[in-house]
Structure formats: structure tokens, C-alpha cells
Length: 284
Image 1 (cartoon, rainbow, N blue to C red):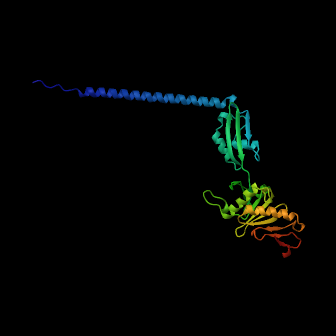
Image 2 (image 1 turned 180 degrees about the vertical axis):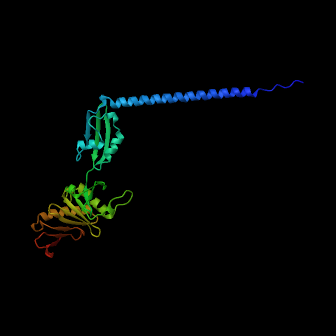
Image 3 (image 1 turned 60 degrees about the vertical axis):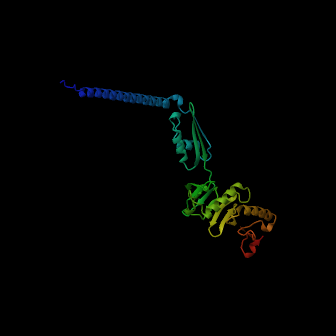
């Protein structure tokens, strides 16, 4: 009897190993080629970046700064960290804008390039509406939206209405309602900014807040007091305008110390005199 032939399993295994080795070598070569291509591309980008960010033709020759009122051109460039001979392609526009917005006086900013050698910086400055005077002698500047944007002393806010009687607890917090006192102050200031009447923003020297009786406003160089209480400010301003027009025609009422508008059904005018007395109070 003839013995059956046995298959050579070792020969087949060696063939499989050679195929696997070839595939692995091919994959490795492809990966190596990809890495070399990536390295070459990265190097090319780095060289191109270095070339363009150092090329003389892209050196800033015209830097425009617009929108400034309080800040100077030099201050804005210093905040933005933009030097005289900077390459405009080396300027990171987003980072430069963040630097500008970090300054308390800058509410909004845009930065753009003008190829080949120009930069444009446009800013919108904060416009302070009033100065909140705190108990520690320092205070906050607030803008038309009621946001306290800068901490400073009162000597730098002589041209603004001073708000007294508020505390740090009254300062607005995002996501929380305003306190009654702060809301009343903002309503009055907003009305005064829009109005050209007797309680216009330039005429207001001081706003005194009392949590029990409301707001009293000192107006004019003589700091005459207008007691307004809480609420109905637009109506009270209209009545005050008519009342002052009437008082100007009467020499007896031409000067006054206080006008009490707490109760619109009983308006009391306290006249200015050397010796104040009950006789100085006139009900109109």
C-alpha cells in the first residue's frame, strides 16, 4: 500500500509570513512618505510665514485709529501693542481686539488689515452717564446701559451727575433684577439724557437716594433741590417745566430752595430767604 502524501504546512506558512511582511513594509513606507510630506509642507508653511511676516512690503506704513474721544491715538496703539514698524501680517487680529476690549474705556473694537501696508483700528468708547459715589470715597462710572464699567475717584467725574445713597449691593448683577433704588436712578438718568427740560443731564449736579422717601435731585449752580420720590418721573418733569415757567413770571417765586413733587396733588415750593420759616413754604 502506498502512503498518502502529506501537505507541507511549513511551506504554506512561510508564504503567508512573506505576504504579511510585504504588506507591513508597504504600509510603513506609505506612513513614512506621508510623514515626510507633512514635514515638508509644514516647513514650507513656516518658511512662507517667516518670509511674509518679515517682508518689508508688508511693514505698516499707514495705521488708522478712529472713534477716539477720550483716549489718544498713542494710548490706543499702546493698548493694542502695535509698534511703528510692525508687519501687518504678524498682527493677530483677534488677539489685538481682545487687548483693546480689556481696557475699561473701550466698549467695542474692530481691527482689520489693508493690504499691503495698512492697519485700521476702530473703537467705540464708553460714554459715562453718571458717577456712583460710594461710602469709601471712591466710586464707579456707569454707562447708559447702567453697567458700572470703571472704578475711580470723584475728582475725575466733576462734569457728571453724582449719585449718592447707593451701596455695592445695589450694583447690577447679570441674571438678577435691579434693586428698586438703582432702577429708579437709571429711569431718571435715562429721562434726563433724553430731555432738554429743567432736569436735563447737564443741569443735574447730584442725585440723592433715600430708600424710604425716594430721590431728591440737586440742580443748577445753586444746587436747588427737586424732591421726586419714586416713580412717575416723566409726568413730574412735565409738571416741573410748567411750574418753573410760571414761577419765572412771579418775582416772589423767582428764587426757591426746594420744590417738593412727592405728591402731585400738593406741590410745595420752599423759597430762598435769609431766615427760613414756615412762611417760606408756598403750596401751588
